[in-house]
Image 1 (cartoon, protein in one colour):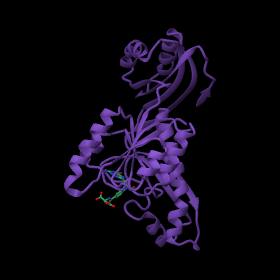
Image 2 (cartoon, helix red, strand yellow):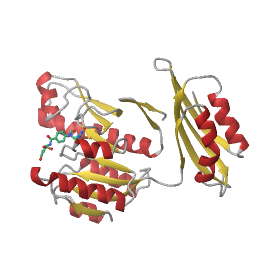
Image 3 (tube, rainbow, N blue to C red):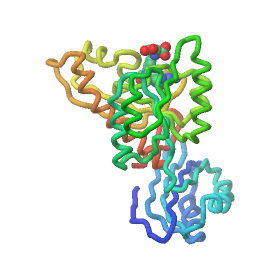
Length: 292
Ligand SMILES: Nc1nc2c(c(=O)[nH]1)N[C@@H](CN(C=O)c1ccc(C(=O)N[C@@H](CCC(=O)O)C(=O)O)cc1)CN2
């Protein structure tokens, strides 16, 4: 169920997301709290997973100017505890800060940079990190800091420690693997749990692993696709956020599928990044609930 209203102007916009065990009164408890704090709901969505007895909820609302997230968090804590909620409340005006990781393929990076420059990316690209120097000029021309962080088997631990320091130093909220062709260690995946999104160039779970377009061509598929998912230690098996497909046929070579598939990769990744930045993606085990 989705309800949406335009936000007032003399107030601040917040987003509350939560999940909790299903029981009567959850929505009533949330809306009573919001009304009591002088808030006005502008968008509300919820999903009741009857298989697991879990309710998921996303409410966007305005509060009187100057209320501040800390005050609302302090006041909501009792309600959250009473319903055993896992919850998050965020100031919608604060754009999440992004660290984009790339290797040599630039099509997803170029798309994200274009969306960022044109104001249609809901996150701020703080810097780009690459294990190759090739894309420096393109990134710096867009006015974004570029850091070359080479990765070799022997230096991978140091490189990953440097990456985590960059995440802290730049107050990064989300790491985006835009066709970054290095496998992240289990420790790094744990450190970035729920904060790293990868674009895999196939319609998972089909054709996981290397050269998915060549696998697809050998299989004679009539659709190629891309999958944006959270990064976990299990390669290409993280919670799926968005997928996109494009029709193909027998006349196209494997390399032509690679080129055609790029449009699906760009679209799936951009949607996933924007939905994550808008707190529209709620984790549900190894799946997601998407309130878009
Ligand atoms: N821990 C994870 N790391 C990464 C994931 C993931 O889901 N979990 N997604 C990949 C992206 N990817 C496919 O989409 C992928 C990238 C790289 C490789 C790979 O075998 N890389 C080699 C090095 C290859 C090279 O140097 O050119 C390696 O890391 O040894 C497989 C899949 C991103 N990382």
